[in-house]
Length: 201
View 1 (cartoon, rainbow, N blue to C red):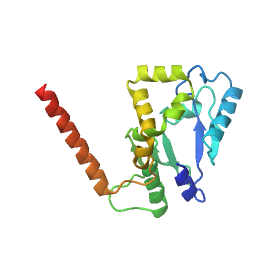
View 2: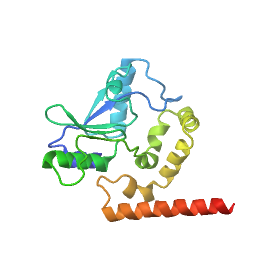
View 3: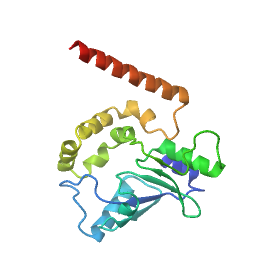
View 4: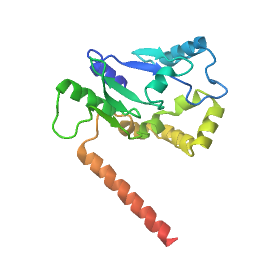
């Protein structure tokens, strides 16, 4: 996202809305007061070195609920205040495409403007989410693993493999079509091999 900011901040206003504690634990629990939440938002902005504005939702999560109540959504709002793109799970390459289309006008082929991206783009979260998961503490990690197994384990493994996976998982531009086809083919081949091995058993 910081790369998008560096490229588009002269034309796009970036805003982060600080909502609930995603994985509360013994270090950072659920917010008990507006003052506490404001302070933790300040710490978050500082720790993540965010150059854009961070707004703080109220304790009831009014803004969060109004805008869909998802864990990591992204919205692109045009100059007239209309939501022209909604990603249910933040995916920077798709957001870049939406921004480019907004400035370029109608495009040939499939457009992402005036649409909802329903895809749960979890790859980046698994690769880059360990430090955020640890914010709450060990109990937050345990609760996450129990609630959505094996999400915490995958996030930890993604953290270990981050030097290798980051160029793919944390990219700011869409993959070329040939690369997407290659990855899709590899996935199909891997699934076929797994099915064959299971049949042998």
